[in-house]
Each structure stands twice: as structure tokens, then as C-alpha cells.
Image 1 (cartoon, rainbow, N blue to C red):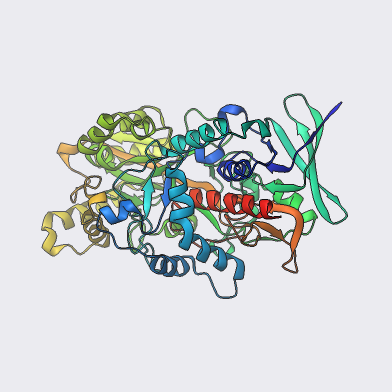
Image 2: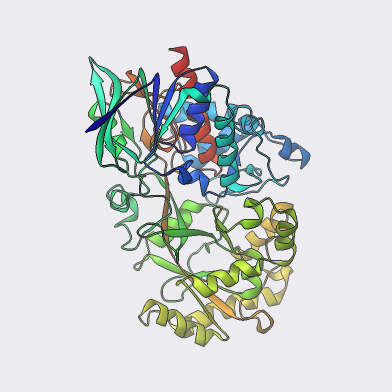
Amino acid sequence: MSSTYASDTLVLGGGLAGLATVLELLDAGQRVLLLDRATPDRLGGLARISFGGVFSVDSPEQRRSGIEDSPELALADWLAFGEISEEDVWPRRWAEAFVGRCRADVRDWLVARGVKFLPVVNWVERGLYQPGNSVPRFHIVWGTGYGLIMALIAAIEAHPHRSKLEIRYRHKVEELTNQGGRIVGCTGIDEETGTHFTATGSAVVVASGGIAGDLERVRRHWYKAWGKPPEVLLNGSHPEADGKLQDAAMVHGAQVTHLEKMWNYAAGVHHWKPTHEHHGLSLVPPKSALWVDAHGKRLGPPPLVTAFDTRYLVETIAQQPKQYSWQVMNMKIAKKELAVSGSEFNHAIRDKNYVRFFASVLFGNTALVKDFVDNCPDFVTANSVAELANRMNERQGDDAVDGEVLAGEIARYDAQIARGESLFNDDQLRRIAHARRYKGDRFRTCKFAPIDDPGARPLIAVREFILTRKSLGGIQTDLGSRVLDASGQPIPGLWAVGEAAGFGGGGMHGLRALEGTFIGGCIFSGRLAGQSIIQG
């Protein structure tokens, strides 16, 4: 038994890039078949559970905050931070196009569909050795990624051409169909019934995500300069992001590039209610915590501090012999600075609760810290440094942490703070001072908090692993999201969008991302695919 479907365009994947493509096609009155492996409650993919940061340039939010920005400045930051060479033609063209059009084609497009942003723009990826974001550009969606996806789903459901969209869930696409050199459809399995299906269309859009959900594939493409991949990797993506539709496209001549360039995170912890194997959560590491290795020795120099260069954090930990780390802090620091990337634990923003949100900013997020201390297996607490070291070793099941080494590192750091700001000579304190000068960080960053503070106990140590999140490489595409072959020519009938395409061009970010560009890249590439298909 098998099923047969037909439509004008087949969109393979119901993540954010797929939804953006669908909306663009419906606007033109096209018939669309959306095939997604997930269940209806997961429509929207990784973006649905994301924090919802959107990169934008010269936005109304920036202007109201007195931030002067321009596409020229943003592009200079992008190319420098990503280390994109002149020879990397398509990633560079995509970077140029995205930076110049992201406000109108992403931010304004979302606003027109009911999405709102917090007034204060966040400043992330400021750069460490390479220039990063010269100014704040990380616009947080009021409602997180969940609210963004719900707004787009609502726009689809209320669309005057909604009847022209057919959605099939639990449908796993396995192969693309080629007829006379043109991609004309796909075949696969309905995982709910176990039966095969065939689908045909004049255009096929691969919107299936990257490789971050397949940990073995991540290990195969691990950045060689970092040595062997970690034995313990946490999955911060989802299992469906397995790269198999990239493989299917390669069968028909598609070029897949830059898979070794990944956007992983350094502060991954185990989810205590996992929905898939190795399910991890990405913490937003407190700037005031001390980041130490498996033995309790401070990492660096320079010391590890979040919001400057995420890739440097991952690289430093990946090159440690044990390839995991600890962050040491106290309850005062944790309440003010600890956060989790994603919608699941950001209830106030996700639920659009202004009172709860401002209370957490002003008084700290005690409930979040308690939730993790009580439930996450990677958190330990104690009332002295010696006791903390013992509990860290108990949790890891060895005696790797040297209590005297850890105590010495904490004492030296705390002594720097005790000398006063005029005598600070520690790079972490200098970066905290820099962060606190910007209003978006001032209320979320402690004012030079010592670690071993009797009035701020208990002490907290968090064991952190590298967590996969997004692929920066993917299927090479032109600026119409058309898939390119080895000669640089479009493969008739085939498009790729979002993470499957490295968010455009097979890797438009280069080696590093300026953050907030993943949601933007999904929307931008999906819209361009829809426009290209409509234009024929």
C-alpha cells in the first residue's frame, strides 16, 4: 500500500525556513505540499524552542536606543568575524545580500505578521581576537521563538489561500526523484502507518535542517584543527536534523560545503526530562562565574567569558584533555546572571508576562536557579570551597578536581575584586566592566561579585559539556536558493533553504556567526526560494 500526492511545490521540512517558504508561495496563490517528519505540536522545528533572537541592522529598536548602525558596518563585522575570503563566492554574496536586506525582509516582515520585539537590543558576539558585533544587533522576540512560530502558523491558518496548502506529518522523505535531469518529486515513508509515499511537483524545496541532530555525523565532520571530537556531546538540536536530505541532494549533483563549520555551545547540561537521546540544554553562562577545567584550574588565558566569542569558548574546552568544564559561582551570581537559551525555561518572555519579566530582571530568577539545582544532574552546591570540590568529584565519579587548586583560583580572583576597580588587572573583570557600560547588560550582570562570599552562598558548580546546535555549512545555493551543481549551475527543480543550505550559499556565516542570524537566515532564504519559484 502506498500514497501518492501532487502539488505545484513540495516543501520538505516544517521548520522556520519551510514555513517562510510556504507563506511566500501562498501569497502568490501556489499550491503547496508540506512534508514534515514531526507531529503537529512540533511544527516550526528548532525555532519553536529557541530563545528567538533576530539579527537586524539599523532597526527602529536600535535608533530609539541611540545606536547608530548601517549595512556597511554590519557587513564589515560579518566578514571579519566569519573570516570569509574573496574566494568563497556564494557565502560572501549571501552575507552581502542578507546584511543589506535583513531589516526589511526579516524584521519588518515579522512585525507585519504580529511579531513584537523587546525595546532593548542585546549585545552578543562582541569579538575577542576578531571584531564581532560593533554595536548591539540581537533583537529578542517578545514571546521567544515559540511566539514567533505561533505568529507564522496563525498567518498561514488565516491566509486567504490556506486551502491550497496540504500538510502531511510523520512523513520521512528518503529520496528525490529525477526525471530527465530535473527534480520532480520525492519518495519516502509515512512513519505513522509504515507505508510508502510518492509526491510530485514542479519545484522541490529542501528545508530539512542541518546535521547537528546526528552526533555521529557531527563527529565525522568535527573541525580537524581541534583534534578528536569529545566523547560526550549533548544534542541541542533535534534528531530529525540528520543531514540525510543533503545526502539525497548530493546524489543528483548538489554541492554540500563547509560542514566542518558548526555553531555549537560550550555550556551544555543534561535535560532531566529528555525527549531524545543525549538531550541537552544550552545555558547562557554567567559572566561573573569562574570557568575552570576538569581539575579546577581556571581556563585561559584569556579567561572564558560569554558574549564575546562563542567559538573560542568551544575551541578552548574541546582542546582540553577531558573536553568538559565547570563554572563556579554563588547563589547571588546565579540568580542575577544564569539563563537558559530557548523558550522552555524563559516563561516570562514566552508567555508575554511583563510583571514576571521585570521582576526577574530586578530581583533575579530564583525559581530558575532552584529548578536547575534541584533537578539538573550537572549542578552541585556546597557551603565551602573544599566541600564544593568534593561534591564536584562525587558527581563526576572521580577525583579529578584538586580542591587546593580550585581554592587558589577562587582566592586570586576574589583578591582582585577586593583591591577595587582602580587596581583591577584581570581580563574577566575588564570585560564585565565593559559589559556593564551598556544598559542591556547592566541589569543582568553583577557588579564585580566575588565567588567565595559568605553572604552569597551556597556555592554552585555547574558541569558543562559541548552541545550541538546548528550547522553553518550546507547545500550550496545561489541568491534564489536554487541548488547548484559542481559547475555552479542550478539543478532544475531543486531549491534548498535554512540550515539545510548553511542558511544560504552553503555557509553564509563563514567560521563564526554574529548570532540572531539563524532565524533571519531561515526566513530570508525561504522567502527568496518562494520568490524564485514564482518567477519560474
